[in-house]
Image 1: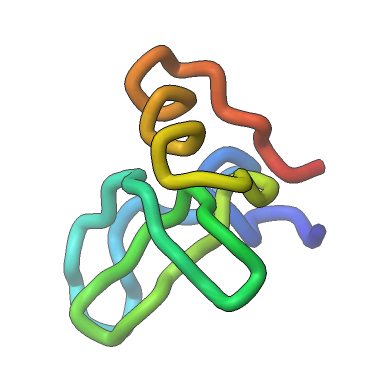
Image 2: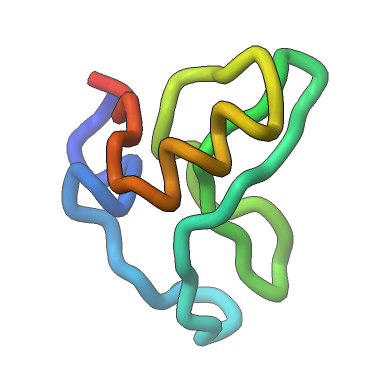
Length: 70
């Protein structure tokens, strides 16, 4: 991971292209569920590793026990 690639590592909370403020939420990709952000342009960052289920990811987000990428 590069510096400022994620919100957790220093990226802006506002998309430079569209000006949308981003917040962490549960998202899904072909690899599984993760905590990430999106803006009006589309996906913005993947903050966490992958979780097997949506429920696991939602619990991590709700309890602030996110497995952040390193």
